Image (cartoon, rainbow, N blue to C red; front, side):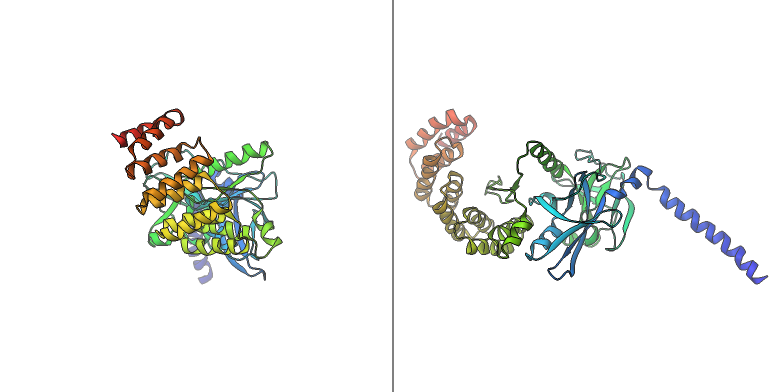
Length: 401
């Protein structure tokens, strides 16, 4: 009788649990549930095979292109012997074939595995986000299993449209896709510990969509992809680009590869880890003393830290190895900051000698002439700029008068 009574009690409890579970599952639309196989787990192992990091990512192209968080890419770069691989639905592991871009825009990066016919998300990179709307995150919650969580958008912050979400974010989940109710990928979770324990964020996918479009276009043309150096000039425009290569294969050819240290420095720089970036660039030029691009990026990083004397030395070394109007422009800009107008003038003149059609160099030269009290020479640069860049010409003449 006691057993029967307990059974009667257990039955409604079990029924209630079933109803609760069913209700939770019912919150997630089928179209979102079907996206589970587009999510991957990413692992970084050291040279001894010991696991040192894990994270999440998702497939954006059926030919094996994956989005993940830059933090795990940087972890991979920390030691040349580290390996990175992605585990897709079903437990199949693929090693990285190529890092498509080391530019960590919004803390995201693209890499490729050697695979075809994979399920891929539908990107809604230009989706208009709405505060309060329902969202779903599919990712790696504990490092061992893939979970689906539902929540909402709490706010959309700043010009970069940083998305504050109600779903908890962990380091393992960083890089997970955020879906809307239509099953479209509208963002990627990012772990930002400095933002506060009670704040959880995702970033939009606009930058990733642009990189993916560029990759596909160049792939059709059978052209190697350029890997952005991720370094910026004082005006925040791209400073230099390097030819794309399989970073890990290059590193394996030489355990002290200058290119490996250079690319590592680029990644550190994107994450604003400037001291680490400087060390990586210094190691790169130590191995390869004629590595002009490494000196250029080293100068740009010093500039960001306000270490102008070091930046000048790095830029000088770069133009000694490979004279460039763009680098002379950077060097001259620092001389302007330091009030050395005559040296800045001579530096910008070298830029115009290398490229007489460089409108930026002529404008900078005009400014240097003006600051140095050489009004007639400033006007001559205005005349040249009228044919090269009317907007800069007008800006320069406004400065004169």
